[in-house]
Image (cartoon, rainbow, N blue to C red):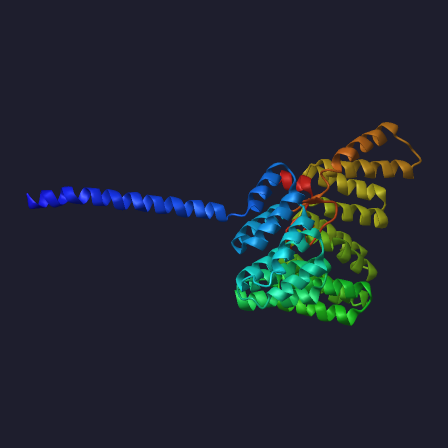
Length: 393
């Protein structure tokens, strides 16, 4: 009975405590709601009514009154950047950075967001400045290095790109040897265009040091040797390409044929081209064979080669080359086949779409072969084969 009496007496006490706790919680909630600045609700209303400029002003006022809304501004700035409204994103993140009482961690975050704003807007110098400042923050250092690497690649600042890539390799454990090799190849190509052959050779050596299997570096090494008149050395480099990656034969076919021709080895050059076309059937190789055969043996000989290859590997691009060869023979003989010309014209309009290269990563199509995809900035993502050949394979 004593236990039951105590239990009955405790019920009113428990009810009273619960009622007091509920009232306290409600009071706290009302106080929190009252503490929210009116600018916050005004900003939301303006944003919902598609008045983003006034909404930004209202939200900036919120930050002035309540530092706890910094995350709101970060989210809003990111939203504007994704929408392509970079000036508004910059405005928000710049205001955050100008706050003297902004915590260090949030200041670094705001600086990172501001750098992304500038990068998306194409203001590369300002973006670079922001990310360079972030290198001192261990929480953002790797992201800053990756952003700087992208900026230096866009600006073609290849030595700076090499430095950033090597820092990522040593500090973050990432692998960038393929990209580093291409950076040096870009330097070599620029030097080759200026006839600075010693500088080009140094850059190629550095590229091969970074990536011994770099097809592009081997091709450039052959180009440098050929420009010096050392055709045997050039052929040696290009044949290393043939051994390392047969699919890249179309990229060296013209070089090999011309180097042999310069040494008086016309027959050997034609034989090599035909063997290469058998080993790696390609419309680009067919073009080289057709042009060199036409130049050295005449249009009739070229037409026979093209006809044989088209029968072995039928394609619209190959058939177009066959029509062109037959039209060339007609011109040599003083004949004009209007119907054949019309057929070739109609076919050419269609094959233009097939005669493109396609990035294996993002699908970006290009008329010219690229070592670096213009769409996704990936290195070595283009197979050296035309679109029709890729679809057939």
